Image 1: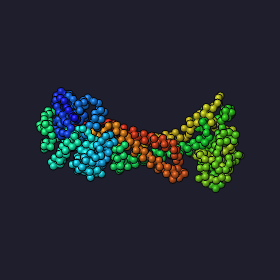
Image 2: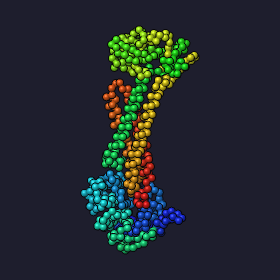
Image 3: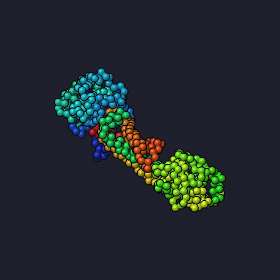
Image 4: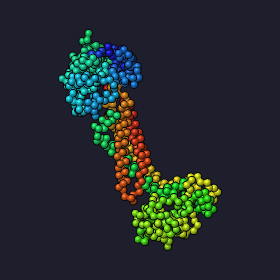
Length: 227
Length: 351
């Protein structure tokens, strides 16, 4: 069973009087088929958590494990390859390459990675996300919600085991936000992905299987519907 | 290369502008180098046709053929070693129809290699003192086969019996005549200005007042030749640097605009190498297209320019310059590439 674990992970920035503990002995796990929400106010350490879980930063102490193997101790190239093969990122902005059509965003994934999603599953994803009619459009021709759905589809197309989303609903209204979160939940269950969403928007909690809260770098489990 | 081509297709105007810029500067480089070669040809084409690699001149003549006087014993030693005597001076000629032209008169010996190698395109080679073979450039000025020309400030006339190609010296058409006739015109009987050799290191020793020089040293010392060549080379050098700067600035701005996207792509695991290759390919592509169009324009320009414009487009020179421009363009992409390598995906995710 695929899982992402953080064991006693701490991240400390600076030293002396300017020292800041962004994450403090965080323990976390996410499994395939789960939607995990990480909520917390601005500056609580959510993005630090996401970047460490996604291998973009190394923790000061502790360990990140992907399917039981250490991740944070590998070199940059190995981390990059691991991100390409196992992790899909969905971010607030700049998700899509502006000079590629929606169809070409997927073609780019094919150029850099083998063994992407099968055509049938991909068609299914396009249907589920409602973006089948947008394939010939450029990102600037899409609404914020459409762009975010395309970004989710692109992350899924690479067939990763984990999807890490950073404030994916920040630019969306309430209905669209709930819709996107429902989609994450639906996709996690349907395609057996572990979806980890970092947000300050507590309205999304009802759509998640697990909810963690981070305040001042301390993480605690608020809700677990998987048990 | 996928990203590079897609971006160029999508951002047509931007890339058309930079390609246009490279095309214009390349065109200017090709035309300038063509003019430089053309002027060089006007300066020394005749020497090239002789196939000479060394020259004996008076030590004190500062490598100037008209100012040089090689004494009799030195001339004998040099000609015994296979050299060909030269008498050279500037003059003005006039035909019976009134056409006038400044020329360089070159006296050569009928038994020596310059005369034997003289390629006459029209007519025959000269066989008597009152006959001359002239540069075909004089045709443009109205001189014809069979015309009688008169040398200024003398009563000496000669008949044009042949035309020869590429006969220019010191940016003037050459008139070949016999040594005796040349000495008669200058009223300096027995004076030989120099002796040239095909051999780069002729077996000539014991020269008294003369010295053997490499032919390139002699060409470089032709009046104005070095200054002219250096001026053109400087201009061409500056233009190559301008290409480097223009492409660097252009690609840098484009890259900076795309850095957030590159950051996200890196976060998604796209290798830096892939992004770098795309940027290099983009640079290569726009340089190739720009240079290619410039080569076509240069060829057309060379064909339509009037014969009076001294332009000589050498295919090998254009090829070398084109490669140099493409290399400059690739160098120009190095600073933007450094930015791509440096961009940390973490900072693109609010870190």
